[in-house]
Length: 148
Ligand code: DQA
Image (cartoon, rainbow, N blue to C red; front, side, top):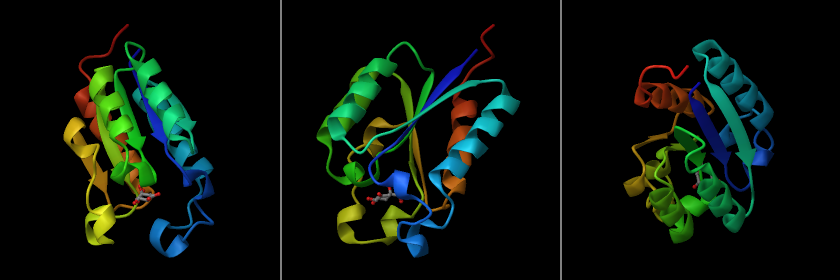
């Protein structure tokens, strides 16, 4: 069975209440529930983690090596600052997809740089909670034939 790891970065646990004009009113629980349903239909394994801590995210990515086929990550604010998370993605050798709810390229200048984008297969940004389901579709497209 193919396995996908979803990592939600800092403050995404507050989705639903957090700046709803920018991030929408869908909660992280609702996003995760939807992803689980999508993964079940596609018969793939899905693990979901959330952390507000840069080092913990680096550890999670490091542990993903050889355990997962694809990582989907919303590094949130660390997108724009974390060389450590970028290096962890580059080092782990797992195909990675970057996700954002908002269109980071249409926001403040400091959000328009993603340090992780160059080490990811691709990025999905700006489709609100649907960015995650689009990322899961993209992950499925990266997977080859099903493992038994
Ligand atoms: C975000 C965009 C980031 O700039 C911001 O810091 C976040 C969320 C998004 O999903 O749109 O926390 O990654």
